[in-house]
Length: 376
Ligand code: GLA
Image (tube, rainbow, N blue to C red; front, side, top):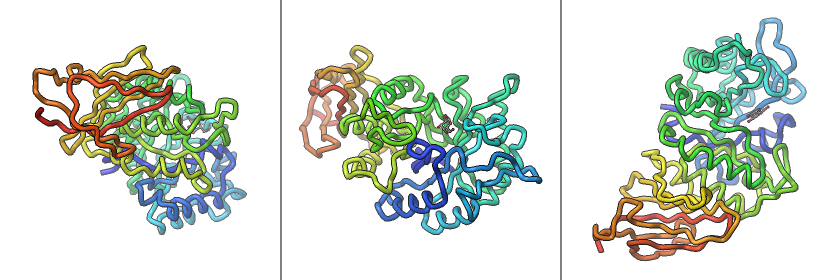
């Protein structure tokens, strides 16, 4: 089964945009192996837009840009596979990609066969230049069928920006993940708005087909293709970003440069506890316990070991107490049952709590606790 758990990997777009090459992919692959990303679960290396030439060849096939990929895609796929990783590529449901290059509308089956021949394991399928009168759901279903008939197992990552409420139908057409929002930018407001927009759409985020609120911007610090140097994200905000994605149980696609990632960001992306939350096998969505002012959500998420993770996210612009009211989490005082709490970041044991507790969080900060039921 593909995408039993949220897919994890790296994608070129956030940092490199169209500035991609065989050399970059090889160096990225090496860095992911050497620095521990592969072993932490980041398996897919995905080449986004701009890998192809401006026209198809005389047989109607897509052609890798020879200046960027002189040895072609099969060779790159072999390199990646030999190192225990998986190879992803990009096309688009429209007539041209978002950067104006040839894409798959009307060519779905031949393109899927080409990708299979190249050893592709993952297709990101975008939505630019989609013909006005064509049927969007059908177009995604067509590519899904084309991939299934290609003779190779290829994960289908539909990228259609949340148009036509994909959480209601992407699972039914066989996608393994689907973009549910517009593009992320490397600034705090973008991170916050994207996360908040998906809280209510998470119930259908589940094994086999995941809601994809876009790639991570951790470690970009204002540089790169979607970098925003005027609104630099702080370490604390990157921590909240990554914790939110893990807590929601969504795909983790690194968008920063793994070759040069700073120590803080690397440790964050490799945080075993957070990754374990993201990859929990029951893939449950969190239950919202409260959300003061709309920007201070407090959740409890049921985990497969019988315990829970409590997530508190102070997304507001002020320092704030974040009340966790046990009665609102299904545990009234009279139940005689409390929760033993351990801080997921520090490992600190907070003992058994009941009734309520109110940690104070700085603006844009988060807390996560592992929690287990205990009689008191
Ligand atoms: C769209 C997608 C992005 C990226 C670019 C490439 O904007 O949403 O993730 O793939 O196209 O052009």
